[in-house]
Length: 250
Length: 273
Image (cartoon, rainbow over all chains, first blue to last red; front, side, top):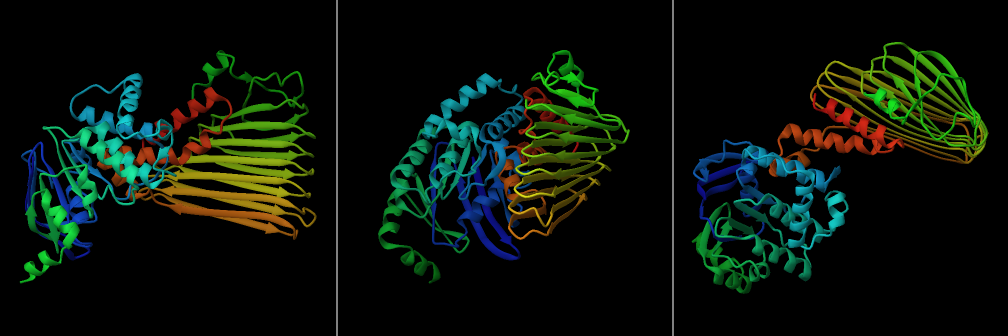
């Protein structure tokens, strides 16, 4: 589904990604861990197409097609979803209106008719249950005045609405209390199928108790320096990154 | 604007007189077509709703006099480029509330005189200028006596090569103690468009609460990126954001069907961005 080959990217002339290689297949869950500043969020932003970052080398194939030459919205319509670490507030634009436009633009790109108002409302009701999102929030402006937990639930709600092939969740667990974490993580697990794939970027093992990864990768200094199975996350939780980083430096 | 339809439905009642008393204020909003100069006296304790339509290039000037304790709601709609002045003179405990929507590059000049204690004035305005239009809104509120309250919120959007202008003035006379006045102007520029904002306060009384604020900014790129990541095109993301920016003005229109119509007309105009 996703093939990243020797990806290099920089921001304001500073190289952040220094040769990333990663392959994600349908049905898989990958976790990307690593110390602060190692390039995890940059990787997510570059895949989404954030204009702040410049790709300086390598290639990315998504469903066999070159991803990097496509505009942000086209990547999204092809099924790439980014769960934001800091979801953005959009004053005056209601969640319902926002999602209606997003869902229908995607349907249009796939040659489908837009949903009727009734169909859309039904879909929204159904999907908001997955993350126990308060129905009232859908009539409020996007993320405006939402609590930290509500914002993250809202990200997963949008994921449920848009049914992406590949979801990249950038620190979706940060700033969540235990209950919100459980709800968000359970939501992600429920949305996982054999046809889609999930990449979770996280600092903590606790998220991976719910979202069990097939692979765990350690990103350090712009490269994946180590990959393993779910037991790696447990080892990192206990021992930190130093043993890996020291190995890497030697 | 298909206002004819609202007249046919009985939602609006055409009005050409110079005095509104109990007989005219029957609960149906009155429609005034602006052209030339007119004076309208409001002399009823019932709440009056006026819809003023500027749909020709004719310059116009309306003086609206609110008698003691009168309450008037105005929806001021511009669909044509023109110059128009609206002078409101308020007696004691009168209440004026206005929503202005400029769908064309018009010049709207609002002057309000608060001449009686406990008079209140709340004004909301929005302009959207595209292509080579020039839109201008001027709000001049004069607190001539003590114990009055006024507020104004004007939002401007200019795109393409359009220009926009806001001029605000809050004047507080020496005897106008305990005045409560707030003036706010928010603008968004797109492309090569330019908006000028000139808010002013002139205060001669010492026991007052006055505030003013103005911003001229661009669209929020983070919000556009966020929307694009959900599959929304940049153009549509910009349109949604502007719609969100202006909606809190339009949503204050108290004639529901007219408000809906205005929101639709604004959205149509935003398609031209």
